[in-house]
Image (cartoon, rainbow, N blue to C red; front, side, top):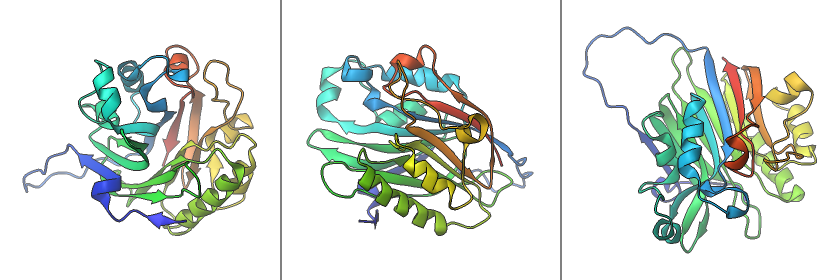
Length: 277
C-alpha cells in the first residue's frame, strides 16, 4: 500500500535549469525568511466540465502571483491524443510549460497512467530541489494517488520540505492515505520547516481534524479565518477541499484567488499563502 518510487525515470521527473558556477569565492546568499506559496488543481489544463483547453491562460495567471513555490495537482505529463487535437497543446509536459523561465526547478510525480499518457502532482520552485520522491498512496480501484515529497535548498535553512498532496474521493481511502502522510512526517527532522499543500478532497473535514491533533501542524486558513477555505466548485465554492499545512513555519495573508480569471481556469480555486520560516 505504501510504495516509494525507486524508478525515478519512470515515475518521477525533476529538473534544474541552474548551471554549475565556476569555482570562485562568492558571498553566501542572504537568508530567505519568506516564501510565497500557491497551490492549484490544474484540472489537466481544462475548464470545468472539460469544455475548453486553457493552459496558456492558466500559465499567465500563475506567473502573475510571483509565487516562489507552486504546488500542482492533476497536471499532465504526457497525452498523445490531446497533443494532436489541440493546436496550443505545449510541446513539453504541462509542468515544464508552466515553469517556463520563471521557476528554475521542478519535480513531477506520475500517479495516473492510461493508454494516451499520464498525470500527477508537480512542484515548481525558485530554489534548488535537492531531493525528490513520489510516494504511491493508492489504495484499491482505479484512483491513483501520490505524495510528491521534495527537499529544497533555501538560503539560511538546512532543508525545507515541500509535500504536494492529492488524496482520494473516498473517505476510507483518505484516512489510510493520511496515515501514510503522517508516517512521512514522522520520518522528517523535528525542526525542519514543512509545507504541505494540495487537494485533500476532505469535504467532511475529518482529515483536517486528524492532522490538527498530530505533528504540530496548522492549516493556514483555519488559523486565520477559523475554517479551511472553500475552493470547490470554482464558480460557486461550497466545499473546503484544498489546504496549506505548515510545521515549523508561520502563515501570513492566506488568500483564496476567487475572482477572474481564476474562476474559469479550473474546477478548483487556488490558494495563496505567505510562509515565514
